[in-house]
Image 1 (cartoon, rainbow over the protein chains, first blue to last red):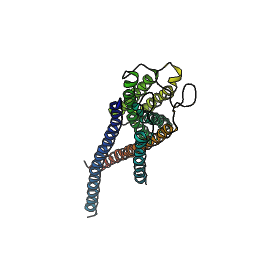
Image 2: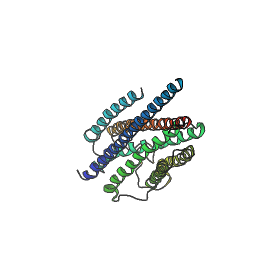
Image 3: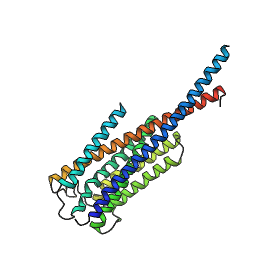
Image 4: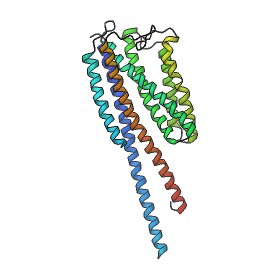
Length: 59
Length: 235
């Protein structure tokens, strides 16, 4: 069981780094989804705005 | 469809990883000379293989981007470089943790270690470039060239143990030919660990690539929306 600490450290670091990378991807995904929601809201507002202008010009 | 494939791949990764860990810690015999610390080998080698595959993919994606100019290849190159960097870092760290009890040092100026570290530095530069510069076609072209040039170091890392005198073991293919694994169970364990790490890499790559594709589509949509606003005079 000599050098068990090195073995433990190596496998712990591998899984810790992979976990951190997955966390990084997950956080980026959350930021992207927030941006998508903002963009959808802007698009909806723009569509409604142009529809309003269309109905005014019809009058 | 892509989400379903990613989920399946995630499940396959989990099963393979559990199998690999079981084999590493409960099935494979302890190596006679190095003792228990030799078990680092079963993750060290797969990490290196996956890092090389990633950087190879960066080079292929870079060439396709320079040739076709399609953003999809730039996104693939970026995602591959990022995952390659993660696994190259793990290769260096696990190698160092293995070297300390066996060689008595954390690091040496050995040819394989040095060429691997150069590879890590070059892709570190690639990622710094991507992180600090805007996502313009000019930056993407420059990054593609850097990615291709840096990948030229991969074959050098592989043959370094034959080209120069080195203390790094040549286990997969020894200097005399053949392989250096004494027991068939060591080969099986290594193959399962390689499969597990490859599945993990593919899963991470798919996640990040899909994310970068979404990022590209969002940027395009935001630009189109800004143009539409400007055209209607609406701000």
